[in-house]
Amino acid sequence: MIAELVELAKEIAADAGRGQRFAPPLNDDELAFFDAVAQNESAVALQGEGILADIARELVSVMRRDVRTDWTVRDDVRAKLRSSIKRLLVKHGYPPDQQPEAIRLVMDQMEQMAPRYSVERSGAIRTR
Image (cartoon, rainbow, N blue to C red):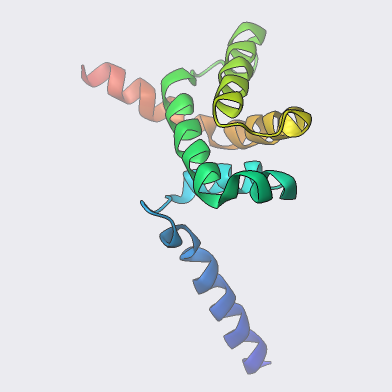
């Protein structure tokens, strides 16, 4: 039982440091988007982890810029985000046949992170 706990602790520590292997390192949000776009093995093989890390960094920027409090219920805002994500994937040469699934995964990630980003964004607007 103790050996299993030690092994679990090692796995958690290794997972926590995964973002550090990139230059510059990926933060937790960027790593979540990296995982979403790296789901496709052919994208990893064709583009490499460096390009996918760049995509992840840009996705966080898109989310910071475009996420609003009501974005999950407004179709026009969701469409704009999907369009921004698709343009970003095309810009970086993400395999076209895998784009719909990547867009879905990225949108799912954004839905998970959106409440925090919309609060941060509304706080930044108020302080201006």
